[in-house]
Amino acid sequence: MAERVEIVAYDDSWPDAFRAIAAQLATLLGNRVLSIDHIGSTSVPGLSAKPLIDIDVTVRDATAVAEGCAIMTEAGYEPRGNRYDREVFAFMDRKTSPKQRIYLCPEGSDTHRRRILFRDYLRANPDKAQAYEALKRRLAAEFTHDGDAYTAAKAGFVDDVVDLACATTASVSAG
Image (cartoon, rainbow, N blue to C red):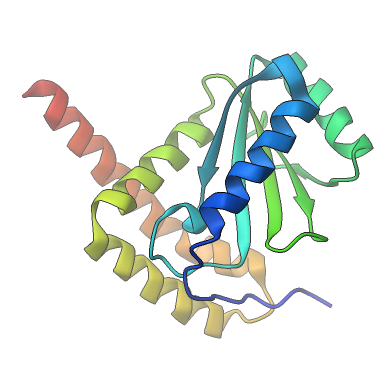
């Protein structure tokens, strides 16, 4: 049976959970790691979200991604396959609370760059974060047991926000 798509109120413990997970990942993956970033809705203060900490781990290159995949699997993370672009691989830990979804990304990953732009734009624009929350709640009710459809239905909003973030960054750079 498919997991229920559940949106919960923002939890002030999410940033601490991220820091604890990041420390574990840094130890586990060692010198392959260039950065560990809290992404997704739990990384935006005040934003309701699925109770799941999303994390991008940026590593040196495709070789470090492959090595990291083997390490993550051996450590008990559930491999979720190649996600979003051909070089990004996802892993889940459903045993923790909140759950964890870890993405291994090579340096220069466009997927990672877009996620950071999206996160930072929502952090800086509470009105857009509120609109995103309303959309997520509506879609969670519509796609109660279809996480893939829920995610796909958010894509247009996410793309629009990333475009806004790029335009804002470009205008600041030009100014």
